[in-house]
Image 1 (spheres, rainbow, N blue to C red):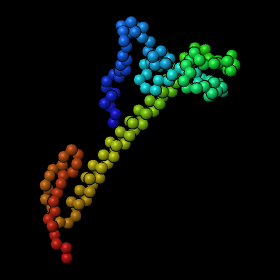
Image 2 (image 1 turned 180 degrees about the vertical axis):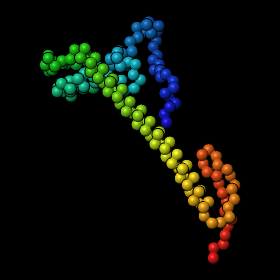
Image 3 (image 1 turned 120 degrees about the horizontal axis):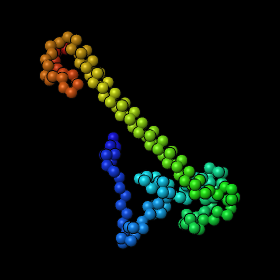
Image 4 (image 1 turned 120 degrees about the vertical axis):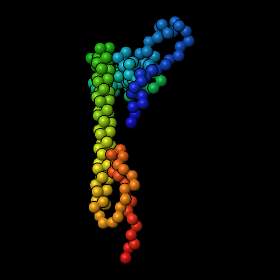
Amino acid sequence: GGAAASGSERKHTIFVDSKQEVADFDAAKHFDTLPELVGRSFNRTKVDQVKQMAYESLGCSSTADRKGNETDSDVDDSHVPKHKQLSPEELKRQAFLAKRSARKLARAKRSAYREIEERSKRAAKMAKAEAHLMTEKLLAAKGTKRKIKGAQDGMPAQFLWRKKRLK
């Protein structure tokens, strides 16, 4: 399966122009996400997406009429009632919940892959058992037979029957 990348630590290389930029680099700001989600190498939810999910969970539609080219400073939250605007703590909570659901999905994905692997192993085991049974059935039949290859890797021995003219 996809075990090639699981053994190595994933990296995300970002190129900057000066050592000052390296010192001042903020990954959360660069990826436009919450600091809790920076360590995630996939599906990093952006701040505005977290806000939108939070507003939707409260029953508001704050971003439905916004254009995609506006920045956070351009966002007008005046149409959202004050009691429904989210504080940074609430945004962090929403990010935590998103991270927890992502972990649950990852766990479900792992268990599904594990089940597929177990099923394929069982199918291979059943195929070997079927081959042994077929060989035993054929050996019980009439006719002169000769062993040409011994059993290997769990597969049955191979036999050759003398050709017999049908009457």
